[in-house]
Image (cartoon, rainbow, N blue to C red; front, side, top):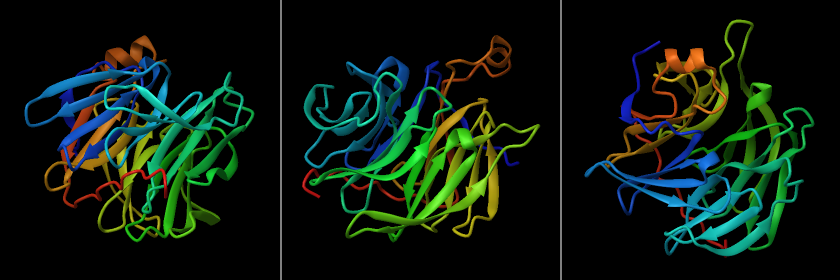
Length: 294
């Protein structure tokens, strides 16, 4: 394993997630889901601003014209830059007592693809959805924890993980219609001694997929053929998601979690919940902007 990520911000986040680089602003947005926060970090000045929402926020995408599309417990919302809920786009179609939106990403045509988490951790009631001007459409069901949404550089492959099943999949994706088909296993994880499982992910310009391994303490890079190319250590047991940023898109940011971790683990990994980064040998892809008329 290669030496990898270093500390950027020691936030002690409960459930840090969904780092998202704004090319226009040259800042990083990321979440603390359990505290209902969107953080805005300016690496040039070191400034950190926190935006509070009225519900847990599981994922965000930058919206054309400013603000965000956000996946909350109640559904998908347009959110202003100050955290104001501007307009509800779609209800969470599942039982909100045990379901909330989790990981999501804007697709190449400006739609939002996002999944939910089954908080019972056993019923498999979670799903993966696409939102566009025609409303919400289901792409996959029977999931436990939807994660890892990312797209290949040509937009014709969708990556998606079911974290609690230790499974990472790919689908054929049609950028024009937003349909996903031909789901197949991309990589599988976990053993009796290694509980690392795929959480959030990102794709680089070479078409390789990077995944943060929750309870695995590392980030892995896979070729488009599913071959493990490299892995990099993270100073936290539970990294949650990676994204590329910086002026050259070669800074790889990684969020992490501290919620629900044992006292022994937190003592061994005192930076749990921090934001980390490393310089990558390859650049990432700027994220498309959400367009409600897509």
